[in-house]
Image 1 (cartoon, one colour):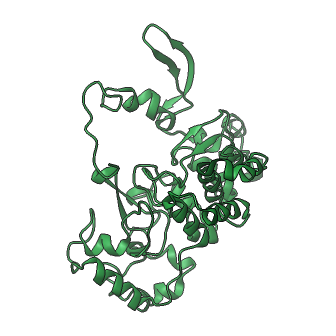
Image 2 (tube, helix red, strand yellow):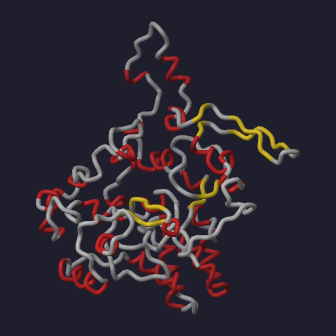
Image 3 (cartoon, rainbow, N blue to C red):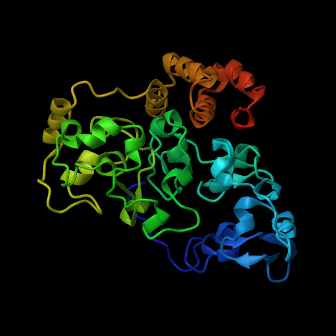
Length: 361
């Protein structure tokens, strides 16, 4: 049962002393800098690893700093153009994804040697949207998969070319999660949605200074993960849809708030599912429908009969160059369920220039 917390006992791999919880194997890749496995000790059955420093240092994001240090040698006053240290504020969106999501995205490394500017998915095989245990078809996590997949599945982030450092300061801030502004602030959203920020009640139908009146209340609510053991902020930055359906769907913002989900405001009126759905349709009768590629994946996850129409829709999604890479790769993985009927489409995927899509073929 994916909604029931497992019982983990001594001796299980996931017990706190087991290898799944081992710092060196599971955590150190992101929580130390420049981790390297030198040898493997057969006697102790442990890798002999070294690292540069505990924690994340400058070179983890900016690359080798030797040349930077050289131009700042004592007695030298270099010009700004002379300093070779990459200024990530000016970097491309794909480059920044490679910097941030190497740690903030669940996946398996398929090769080592990722350098600044490289395509992350040439090195990392991420969790995709077919995984009903970890994520719903709209990109919202059900388990701890960090924020990379939700963010890359976000229509809002994609349309606005958003990057992580627009909202988070990697060098630290006074706010939780190193946010540049408080979570309650609408300042970041005003960049693209000034009309809603200036008159929030007209858009939200909630008082501006109350729960439901701020952008993040509805578009970045807390999602319950780990079978009720934790919460994360929804980085799909999506529209609340109480009526969305699939095999598994993360709780929408309206239900989370009005039925007292974990971390939800306590002072809001409690509503049943019917009242929530009726309110949504009354307040936003012209609400944007679910995106086509999201519907295709949601329907395919529920298709236990292997219907030709679903298979054809997945094939079309695989070929749709306007759809996010993660959805196109997910379409290929879902096509594999159709066996011989999907052979031609899978062979096409095997020759695709994008290795993320090709690996799923």
